[in-house]
Image 1 (tube, rainbow, N blue to C red):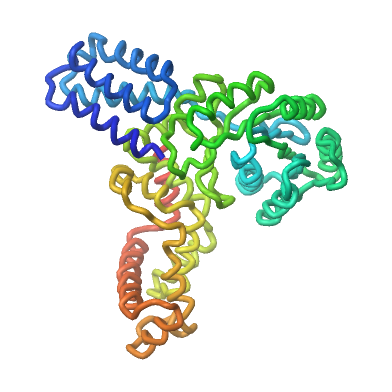
Image 2: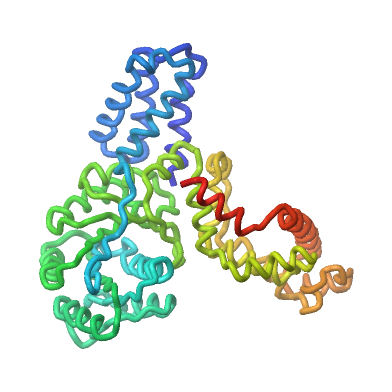
Amino acid sequence: MFENLADKLEKSFKLLKGQGKITEINVAETLKEVRRALLDADVNYKIAKDFTAKVKEKALGQDVLKALNPGQVMVKIVHDELIELMGGQSVDVNLKGSPAIILMSGLQGSGKTTFTGKLANRLKTKNGKNPLLVACDVYRPAAIEQLKVVGASIDVSVFTQPESKDPVQIAKEAIKHAKLHGNDVVIIDTAGRLAVDEQMMKEIEAIKQAVNPGEILFVVDAMTGQDAVNTAKEFNDRLDFDGVVLTKLDGDTRGGAALSIRSVVTKPIKFVGTGEKMEAIDAFYPNRMADRILGMGDIVSLVERAHEQFDEEEARKLQKRLAKDQFNFDDFLKQIQQIKKMGNLKDLASMIPGMGKAMKDIDIEDDAFKHIEAIIHSMTKKERADASIIDGSRRKRISIGSGTSIQEVNRLLKQFADTRKMMKMVSQGGNMRNALTQAKGGHR
């Protein structure tokens, strides 16, 4: 997301390139382009206008007028204002209560049920919680089954009463169930509609009154642009929710919802969904999002994702194997699995400073590793353990078994040899776990 906005903002800053200082004239030209970039990204007109007015006010301050590099100064001012526009600070989910009760709201198709599972998985793996999912959508065909499938995929219990058509009663019974079975967080998945209607609003208001949730989250599809902002306002007027969840940020979205929604409802964006996998959920950090919008990457989030998938015991074993020069294709395969768990590859690449623009027109499939995995799975145990025995006839057999060409097999063997050399160098240079921990700590 945000690639087009980042590109247009970069072009607007170029108007100041080579200028000796910021003046009324050149700042007006730049901000005209900034406002146009925001509107093209589907940001609310009034918000875009107010945003550029604030930037202009700061850009024409006496200290800034004397700056030697107006372009860099303008980027800094826009960066700071973007952070403020999106809420300034990250706000975590409220887990107070015994059990803590989280009520999910949103339109049908917003990704609400999927996100309910993602949130449960996050609370389970990161916070050590024992969540219970509650199926209160009694209208949509297969809604209950969908939540059961989601729950099973993350090993989280799902409370259902298929015979009941009363969502309020289901929610109340679920709270009793949670208290009896030691569930410390209850996440209630409610019904949605294709559009806001009175029946849906009355129903979710009744659930809110019955269970008194400590947290109400509004889930919205970021790809719906300004419609998302309008829908958020209607829900907030009725529910007074605590935070917003933006889903499908990995899709072809212009990003206007993320920039507008905070100003309209004055409620923080708490989480973003970046893919279909249960691990594809991130806390929303305005400063990190501003970095990405301006093409600066998001190395902190990248390190955090790596750290979440980091297995200390496996790392120690790998360290020993690297030291003894025993790194093999089984180890290589494990590393690929860890990278895949970190999320969408294009999204990961965009977190590296300078890579967002470079990756703009490059399409990276989610299953980009499938050919590599197929080749490795076509090897025998001996071949995986010792790649040096893979001669011409073995390469031919592996290529046939994996449905790939001999050239692809040869390319992988070379890449493996290069990777093995590099990882041996890393191993000799210091402990991998310490390097990762220091990188994470140093960027906070």
